[in-house]
Image: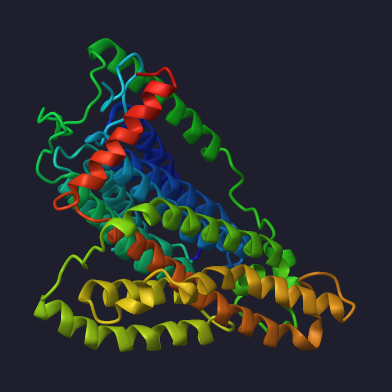
Length: 111
Length: 347
């Protein structure tokens, strides 16, 4: 891509929209797997914005520093996701539910 | 077709898939849509001239994350379980919307819309031409033995960042191993897809190719697209396939060798940095004549460590025994949680 400004605006606005719907879904949805997907989509939105910003450099070559950040970020995100999934399984095994208790609600599995 | 039209379709597809994944009533559908979202993201990375990221995303975002999520869904979406008293514990409803009420829901949606519009406004007003650190990197790359700017940034210019990032990766894996350690004494889980001929044949065909591809990505990464992160992601995916097909499970099982692989990412930076210091240079400063050798060696070890850690993370989560046939341990766990809850005054 030649750093076409129309395309850059399109991807930047897609990143903004993705972050909005991800945070919204994180708040209104309760299943922990769904919330993990929301976190992952939000991090994808951040990565997309970073790489779009890196692409603004004039002259065809993008700024490699955000690229390096996103590369490591993707690997860190997958390892955090794997850890979160194991935590979700432990929560499910301990309480029989994949939802966290709401404020004021008694702990699941408690007497 | 003008290319911006393709970009617009791709961006619209990304947002649509994300929305459907976040609001599909069926979680299985949500995860499959999320995998498709990862594939489209890989396309977007190519369009943004970020091929290294595209390669890593294709292996991780579209492959490993999906495998992990589907595995976890199989664990939490089984038969409704019963607790010790035989009293049913309610399953997560397919529709997991929080009971907020129409007014609060609308108010929150309006708030999010306003925040998103604010973000859009800020992004819109970013300067259109901004080189960032690009020119500094291009200048430093003149006569530099490593041609791939991202690799040079990762292993040479900002090696300290990557060093600490390997620490984050190692900590995530240690946390995962700690969480499954207690269950392992109780029961050994079998890999989920025993006896699948297709999987077996596929793994035997694909894993050698994936190893070659990983090696190629590693080698090419010093000059062109590739590098330790895409190569490690490919290696991790090969490890997951081995685990699923039950061929080389000993390669992805927790043990002294696996723990060494976990530590390798940190160790290689410490050792290389120590050697540099012994030779009178600053920590993680390779010196002109040694840069290429240092970058290639560190990348090779990082590939092994990243791939091994990803496979180990998958193996650790897949090894949690299913709920059936493990009732005693589960009740013990539930009892422990109950005790904790009562002790903390929360019960």
